[in-house]
Amino acid sequence: MKKIYILLFFTIVSNLFSQNGKIYLKNSKFKIGAENTYVYEPSKELTIPSGAVATILESSSDEIQYRNLIQKGKKYEFTTKVADSARTIFVIITEYQKIIDSNKDQGYNVYLRTQNERELSKTLLNEITVKTYADYRFRLNKTSKPETTVAAYESLYKKYPKLKSDKTYIAYLYQKDMATPGQNKDLNLAFADICIKKNTEDYLILATQAYDLSKMSDEKEELEKEILAQYPTGTLAKTKFIRRFFSQKNKTEEYVLKTIDTCKTIYKDSSKETLSSFYSSLLYTYLEDKNMEKIKGIEPYVYNAGYSYNNFAWGLSGGDLTMPVQHIDFATNLSKRSLDLLEEKRKEGFYPDYQGMYNMFADTYALLLYKQGKFKEAFEYQNNVKNAGGLDAGGKERYLAMMEKVKSKEEVRNYIETEINVNNACPPVFISTLKEIYVAQNLPLDNFEKLKEKADKLSQEEKTKKIIEQFGSKTPSDFVLKNMEGKEIKLSDYRGKVVVLDFWATWCGPCKASFPKMQELVTKYKEKEVAFLFVNTFENKKEDVVLKNVTDYITEKKYSFNVVFDSNNEVATNYKIQGIPTRVLIGKNGDILFTDHSNTSLGELIDEQLK
View (spheres, one colour):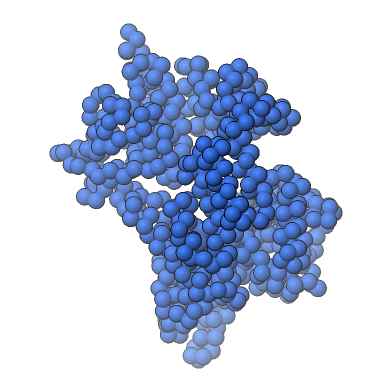
């Protein structure tokens, strides 16, 4: 009877993550510490290409495995070894950078430990955690909501209430807080009590997180003191040590290397996951010194070094066509290295961020090639980005400038007209360039005026659509924030002026790379009816530390910015800021007119408002 119960429950929970095809262990029993063979049965209507592989995320590892599929009649097999502690594996079928079978975005969950009811319950719990993480890693279920995950957890807890004492319960509490923020204090405190009674460092740290979810900072701080006294070289002590490291403003090579040694010897942690954060700081020290030999020497110890290279190279590039470039040869070589590393990553197997990363890195490299006078190469890279649909407004302007260097006026005109005729919104420079070509080629200007009218309409429709999608309406949320001098700044006080909100953070490389251009705009419109508010947000540090860091940075760079502090991220949340830098342009009438990550066309948009 017990076996029947387990089988029935197994079926019920599996339906939460229903599978189209099938993946299962070839042998019914999972062999711990050894390779296991799995069988893949695709759905009948699906054709599996010869180069397809099983892309595997296991429950106890952050690493992705890629295993060849061996055809066995209508089925396929693959073999892999996972950690002894693994309970599930999550599998999708991919070919290069394409998903062949994601089981309708649900993936294939394979249970490894189901020998008794206790093991099965933990495996089912692990499935939810891994599925949530896999959705993020593989970019599946983009519309999934926390409520869905909460429902899956609660269904399982109803059958197995003892699982509420498992460490993973904190993951449920975080999801619950996202679904119903501020309404879960009783649940948080109940779990904190369980953790405190268990009295191990892992559980005590979970208790501090439960306090944090309930905004109980005093209780959290008091418990942390007890943990540090009981475990002076434990996990929390190591976390505090790492935070102190990042609060240091000037990190010399000697200081970073000594910190790495301390982490290894005192805190007994030599994992790449931990040490990578230290090596990333060391990387920026070497980047500032332009020491390519040392830069490449620590590449293997840094997660996604290419991303850091691109950010640094973008900062040196000036960020647009007009700003001066610094150390152009070094910047160009660094940018090319980011693309080379990305190519290596692509060859390893399915990498869901590949195209987005390529668009970003290639855009930087193209700009640097353009400034080197290598116009043909620059256009080739920017054209790749265009063909992948990766050009934002600034990217389109750069594409047009590069195209003008290598293509005829006829080809440029055809490109601009095609963009307008297929209903693509165009930056203002497209229209001014098109008019120049019409005049130069003595073409009928009434045709140009028709195209301009359509382009203006499309541009306005695109801006309005984007604004409504992000903000819900064109009316901006009012706010009151303090600036660096401690003065309260209220947005609505600027009614009647053009207002630019620039959301940024001190840790954001692209934000700081854009500031020279922003300073140009601040200076240009100093005597006009234009106000710039640089909204510092997403810092996640104490307010006094943030104030000092921001003041030091702005003073050192001699920027005349009115910085206001969104200490609790409330303004960024209200404005639905998903990434930084983000600029929001508000017109004299108080309506939001424009929002984008780029500042390339910001000056032209401001000029339009001042007419």
